[in-house]
Length: 235
Image (cartoon, rainbow, N blue to C red):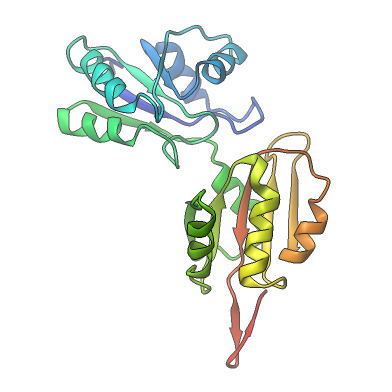
């Protein structure tokens, strides 16, 4: 089947170069160009697999203009493109959703190419029962909005959060102040990399365990509050 006039949404690795599918590599080699958030990151990723392709940037600074330009290339020129994120599965708190939507509206075929995901990888290693959980994504950056959001989180679901590497310590402090030091949580740190660690414990314990931890990508999972015979336990 021809790859022309298509937008491929391609999952790449989240740290370990080996964690990319054969299909993803095939698509990246066949498309006309690759859409990425940052030129340096996109270029490094392709170079790691010996792939040379033109790059188009699509990020929060140029999304409106670039969406239209890319649409023109896909629809009028009949080109094909692969959209990647900085790591893992695209479009989770990443730019590009509008491009995907516009492709659907314009009759351009959107093809998902699944693969590594930091969210699912963290849940796999968490030891939690995974019948139900909520994905929250990023909390507000504004201090007051952040605290308000934490205060109003549901307590009957395990919740998955993303955050920038430099904000781990502040994140734990905010959760501890608002939800109490005994609330249980998990930190999945530098997944798939040599420094990978899974931290399990109370918010107070996690602050201690990660005190000297170097800055790095992580996924934060807040445990739900269990109820046994009418009593709540932060387990």
